[in-house]
Length: 307
Image 1 (cartoon, rainbow, N blue to C red):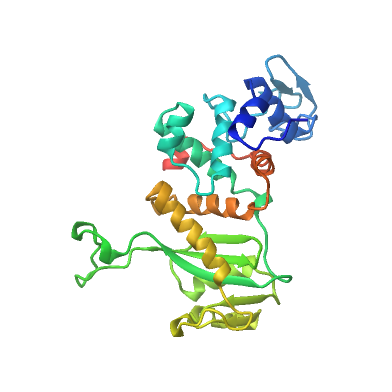
Image 2 (tube, rainbow, N blue to C red):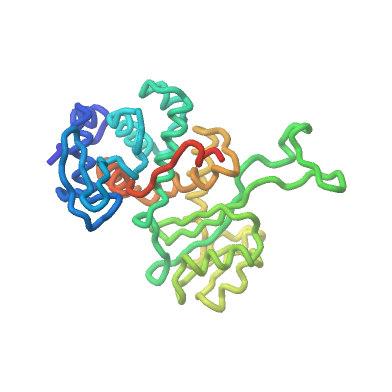
């Protein structure tokens, strides 16, 4: 058993060598019984150099094969340090800062961080909401407002006016519980309602603001509203303060650490903040091991990331 680590100093003591990182990864991934990524039912032979051979396919593999660590030239010690900082810092870390901290290029650090974000999209981190607690539903906009942009960066419509270019994000938070957040193309009810139906169990209690796209929720759920337009923020048990609390974490993190992100990568950043928020009650090592145990079948190449 590893000693519990609560700091970077403890982490470095727990994983002093590359082999110690490999051993820990094997314990989390296989629990003493190596499984071939090519044929899960195949017998496996242990070979030299931390390699294994799949009997049915004749292929060699190691614990990194088919994961976000596949074919990486960066030592696992640096990956572990990056994961520790990335998962425990409330607002994350920029690729420029990480590049300095672990002595890699900014491009490598950016790719590394996106591989970690990619691993967050795992069934272990997905939950349906509702039935027990009230689910708060709200949407927000990410990105600067057009009125605040330089005239050369404003997007004009066909009439010469300024177009709204912020990206909407839909959020659902079980009161005092998990958050699910998804980037959406628009705020139409045809877009929002199917996502809500997929993630919030029927007959749950839901709270929203007065936005009309939510009116049809009353047919599936017990629907309560607060009228933000009338400066009403709490109506008995109805409020959306919980999901708005998550929006504040997300926006302050993006503004303060990353400063800007493209619409193409926004969902990855949303997933990053969602997982950290959903594991807020975990201790540092528990969150670290949770993420590290869910890296299988998540290989991501650089070309796939930037395409």
